[in-house]
Length: 397
Image (cartoon, rainbow, N blue to C red; front, side, top):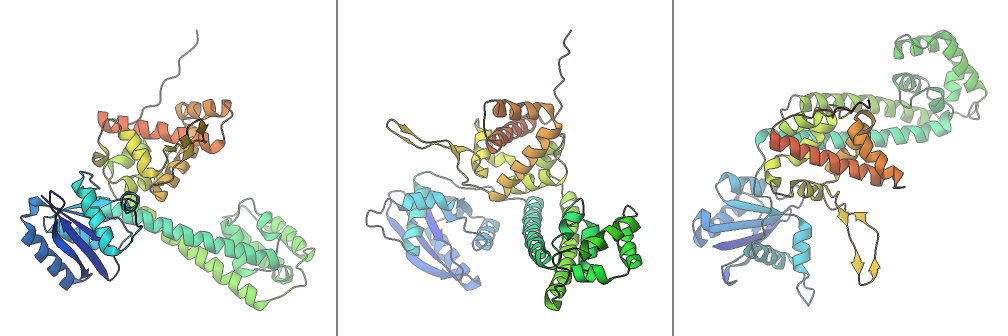
């Protein structure tokens, strides 16, 4: 068996290969990240032996290595994708502290030779689609959050009382007013009938003349009632348009996500309070539970999410238990959000939360125990091929 390590780069990759005894079988070299470089690399791989006798390893370094790994697997090569932390830890064995792309490729090959394996199971087309849609949704939600923060900063100067006037921040009614009359001067100067029409349409009839009169009165007494700035008002109007546009994009992405079939999402959605989107977000990151198959399946999933406890101790000193956070941030955030909603609707998970609160644990610590319960439940549903059933409460006679 021969082991080839590839250190991924944007424009070129470094490759190095060793044999069973650690001897060099492929000298360290660079290949360009294009079709010509791929042809040169596969030519070297064929000279090392048949496809079953060559193992290839690379780091999971963002999107740069995704195309190469896909093409190699498509052509029948076995590719192991490692967490960069695994390779970084192995590279520390160099006492002289050397660091280069070629040396990193050699370290990856050595890790393969030592019997460690990475993610060898490629995602299916449906799993890859769901994962991409979920990450795109996360990206767009982040953009919308930035726009909302920017709008808040503008309104703090133009009309500070506007945000607090409505029951919910960034409600359709609030955005409608900010889009048309983004300053106290603009609200105070507009006709009450026009303002009433805007509020009535945006709130679907819930707000009307009374609220319009109160808002105009608030604008006349605001600290910003005499301050005008056309540039800031234009920026506020445009930001409202961007928020509405991003809302539509998120809605479209969620519709596409719900059209994807996922056994993981189906299982999680059977838990009351999980909703429709969060199970899909979790399923998009996990992909296929078969790659976590082991007696300690739940612990492996928690480790993948970075939600397992990290212990630090030395001699008599013992530090505090902290969450490792060395895993998928998207998965960890989705699990936390789901834990927070599930505990409010499912008594069994609420009991887990309340037991930790009774022990004077922090809210986040209690939620981490709910996450562990959710993952254990998911593993149980996966093994038994059943959906979640709410435990029956015992009647006290």
